[in-house]
Length: 177
Image (cartoon, rainbow, N blue to C red):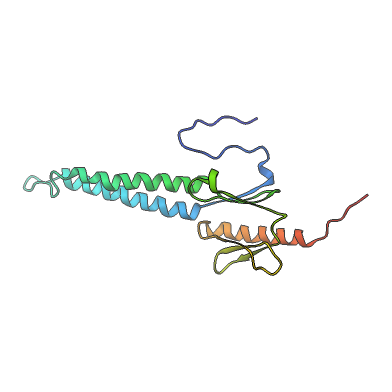
């Protein structure tokens, strides 16, 4: 039974069979945005303190400029939202149907679904952090997916997943009667 989640922020929807898919999010990219949001928040707080706090001998250094804290505060809010979006939403999903690749913005309109019947081979390029998806045996057509948005620990899991998928695809399907 799926329980509805309150919609304060766009959230991934619940799926019927989560055990049949493997999801990778943009957690490394989200971590960067969250750190930048914290830095901008600290900058806004610093401007507010400098604009409102003085000593008994000296007026505040930025007296009358407290409104300028709105700019880094707005940037911090936007970066925080972007960071949370990167951490929560999928980047790559391996399903029984194929491989789904989601862009950062408007995934409902421009996501790519690569069916297993279209994919000839998968290749994990570890040092360059790329996933090479080949459509032909000559490796002349395909898709290159950057893995830098994925956390390094999850890249190792992705490598194991790609190795196991290529092993399964190489084994002939046995039909038992």
